[in-house]
Length: 509
Ligand SMILES: NC(=O)C1=CN([C@@H]2O[C@H](COP(=O)(O)OP(=O)(O)OC[C@H]3O[C@@H](n4cnc5c(N)ncnc54)[C@H](OP(=O)(O)O)[C@@H]3O)[C@@H](O)[C@H]2O)C=CC1
Ligand SMILES: O=C(CO)[C@H](O)[C@H](O)COP(=O)(O)O
Image 1 (cartoon, rainbow, N blue to C red):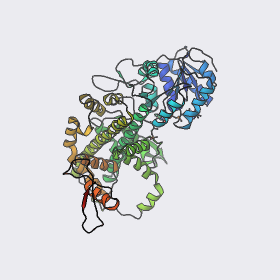
Image 2: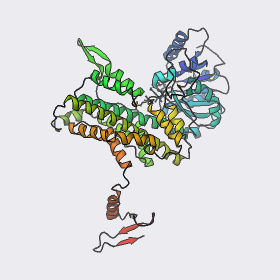
Image 3: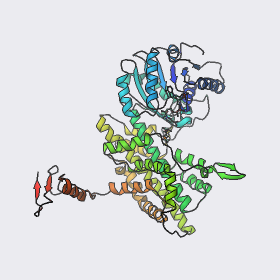
Image 4: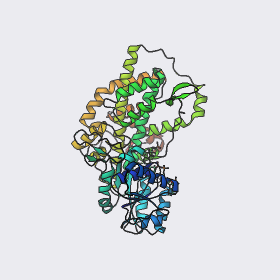
């Protein structure tokens, strides 16, 4: 391995994200000492950097051990980790301690760690080094050409990390709120608004990234349900659906996830001599690594309704139950369906567009509500317009729509819910009827659209000044003497009815 005692940054984990982050750092003029358990990955990264930069200057050096990594760096050391969440993060931390890391050194965890693990780790390693966390979104292309970065932890560490993070992150045109493209190795963008901002104390950044992923799950599921409605309801081909999504991607639904869905739907392979849409070859069993599940768990723990996000997690679990679904599909019947006229199909597509749009608004409303409730519990001071801003480019949920969310929180930083912001109120009121029509027709076709329909239930619950929880409180009081409050009395006063007695007398407690 080459020795260089003057590298700016140490890097552990040269997988999908790590390698591309290293190349991004190198493009931006930083020298990186890189380590991976697999020597081949180190070699590949160095070769790729040399080839892409077309420069003689060495910007990435390989290290054979953690100790070598540490001695290759300027002091105090700055080391970035890009390893799987959980045990590997602690394993690397222990190896760095054994390798001689010092208390003034900074270790940045860029993986999808569980936010509570990050809080614990900051305390656990405080005598050994400063653990800082910065979740990353953008997949491999984002990591290479500009991700969205969600840093949190020691404010001192942030002063050292900030210029580097601002350099490598995605950038947004401040006038339009649209991403500034950067697609080529060696290219840098040093203008525009960087998609990174200090989120808050330890754990806050990973919480925000977790919610980003929860929204990502919901966004993806909403698009997939629209795909199924068009595929099974209107019997459209992958190409025909791609054409519809392409049109949708020119309006308020313009987003990275819509764009990649079009690409996936258009892609073809020749199988047994026949040109086949790749999407028709992919088995309908979704994987998941846990961040969506954590978001749903957090929503339950905090008591923040996030049904669209939770439904998106359930939809992945349901998809994985392939064999029992195949069996049930031969036993359970659905409705008899009449073919729709061309005019009915056009109305169906228009209504579906609005259902997707309104459901998307609800999913984001749930995510922001969750962050708002977590901030209250944790004592964080999250800046919601800044969070929306750094999601406008670089990350997986980037969408034009995030400019409207940014503006909503700029208008009212303490906005109670996106569903009471004047712009979103106007949008939802305008489209709600089409949304209902879409859900009604899709349900009559027997197609499952849990994210679209649970979003509608969320919307209708939010606009209900009286929900049926009065009866529920009556039931709870009946079987468990759990008491209830009365609409005609001061809030907080508790009542109980002696249900088992003949008189059923009400008592004030
Ligand atoms: N892929 C994505 O789109 C995104 C991923 N992330 C997160 O970024 C992190 C990295 O993801 P990704 O690059 O996709 O994962 P990869 O599996 O591609 O890379 C992980 C790297 O970590 C190394 N590693 C694994 N275990 C250990 C260990 N115990 N000690 C040292 N190194 C270890 C692996 O080494 P080797 O295989 O050589 O043994 C590998 O190089 C994860 O936390 C992931 O959740 C975040 C945003 C997007
Ligand atoms: O963080 C990410 C994107 O933002 C990762 O791609 C993440 O792995 C996606 O989650 P899952 O694998 O559960 O679909």
